[in-house]
Structure formats: C-alpha cells, structure tokens
Image (tube, rainbow, N blue to C red; front, side):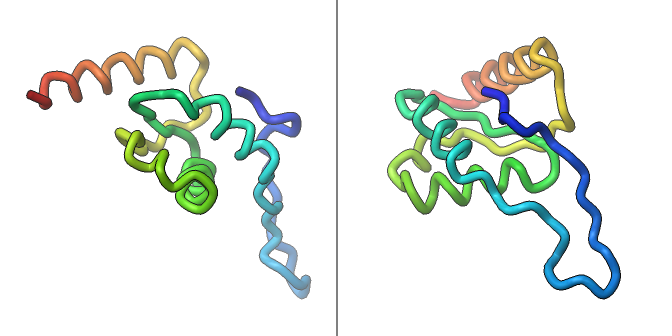
Length: 99
C-alpha cells in the first residue's frame, strides 16, 4: 500500500509551537491493518518512526494482531523488489530457526 501523501520532510521552526512533525494518518494506518489482517506472519519495515507508528496503531486498535508480527526492521524507502527480497530472506531465516 502507498499513502496518498508520500513522505515529506517537515522541519521544526524556531519559536513555533509544536514539534513540526505531521500527525499520523490514522485512516492510512487503519487501511494497512485491514489489508494485512488475515496474514499469519507480518514483517513491518519502514524508515524512521513510520514502522513504530504502525506497531502502536496495531497494538491499540487490533491487539490480537500483535501475535502475528514476526519482526520490525528499519528499511529506508526500499523499492518493491528490494522489499520483496528482504522479506523472502527474513522469513527464510525465521523458518530455519523454528521447529
């Protein structure tokens, strides 16, 4: 899934109220949760705090799904091919470590 408004750097301005960060897009996070809801194993990847925001959203709004989160890894804006290769390698290694 891709957000309607892709990542944009927003910087804090001196003498301004607030952190300068844009708020989390709860509608997008909910759509992601709906899309991955039937998954048996979930690998959450992303840059910066994006992945953390998704994990927090899952924990708050779909806590039973947390049991399916296999891992959380930092991957900085990967292409689809790179992300797919990363997931294949991750789950292959995870399979080798399980009985």
